[in-house]
Amino acid sequence: MAGENEELERIIHAATNKFNQYAASQTYFIPPQAHISIDIESNELAKVYIDVEHNGNQYHFRSVEEKDIDDVHTYLNSQPAVRAKYSNGQICSLEQTTSRIRTLAGRFENRNSPLYLYSGFIVTDAETDMFIGMASLGKGTEPGTTEMARLNRTECWNHSSNNTTAGVNTIGRKIYSGVGTIEACALVQYATRLKQDGYTVDGHSLQAIVSTARTDNEASWKSACKAGMALDTVEVVERHGTSLRYLLRKNI
Image (cartoon, rainbow, N blue to C red; front, side, top):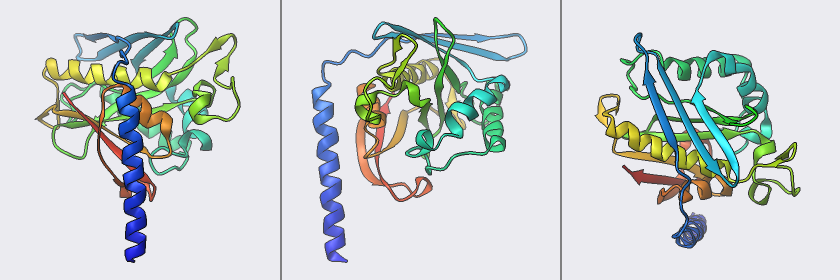
């Protein structure tokens, strides 16, 4: 048992050093600027749009709607590769996807919901309207925290960190690089805007945005790091399985 504990401590120490060394190398990174629009209609239906430019591409975030169920299930939730390092690593049924999308869409329909955050976005190429992925903020495990979540179709992954074949993040003549960074930066800026506008999480003022990422999922934790999230600890999060994860946090 002592030997196992020592080995775990060694692994955690190495993972901590790896994150901190990467964070130190990103001191001069300038996050892409998110242009955020929150429109509240007379029936209290919210319409939220976020536009971001990065590496020559224009990206558009818009409120999730029920019409997005097929895209989310086809490109994300039914794909083992996409889900492998996300949450518990399991794919979702169409019924589970439908329930999730309806929950996210409902956040934009009822200003008095317990969460009280307008969040859950479909991310597209702003020029072609091509589906790229989904990003959202939800309730964190601590009062006043909101947790970041992101999933993207495999064709838009950065090959250097997630894939073994160069060029797989190319669709048509476009090369998508840094999509996760765009989403993380946009969500951090959006959370900051929500706090400024007085939104709460279950009645608590927003204090921090948090995220978890498996230590072997470099695309996830590196993009969060670029968005200004710092390492809180390295541990196993039971609800996400047995893999070690970085617990990341940015106070807002």
